[in-house]
Image (cartoon, rainbow, N blue to C red):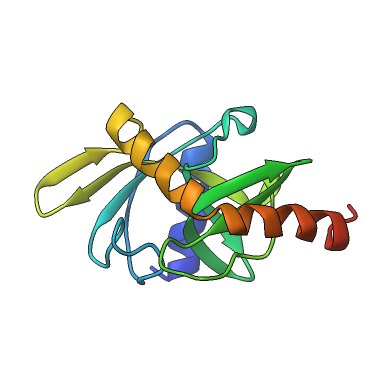
Length: 144
């Protein structure tokens, strides 16, 4: 099965309320997510998005799992933890779901636990500069 077909099937399952386990590749979320890990992606009500959540979304024919830094006017600003730049703005309709769990080497981490949420808030605070740039980006470039 081709990668795009797999993701489209995953999107349909997630939209129907089924949690989907996806094998990860890429280093953009290192050290939180590593190639070979599995992410469990769940449906998220958009009004429940919180900075620090790891979102699955489609952008420029790529499927991405990156951390949410800021939300404003139905536009999300996300960033890979290992990147020193932000992603282009993500519209709500591009979001597939939120990563709920990470599985690696027989271990499972629930990203919605209090400990993991504290860790995510620290990462978002560390990315405060990106948050400020996000506000400028939305005001200057996003007129939709």
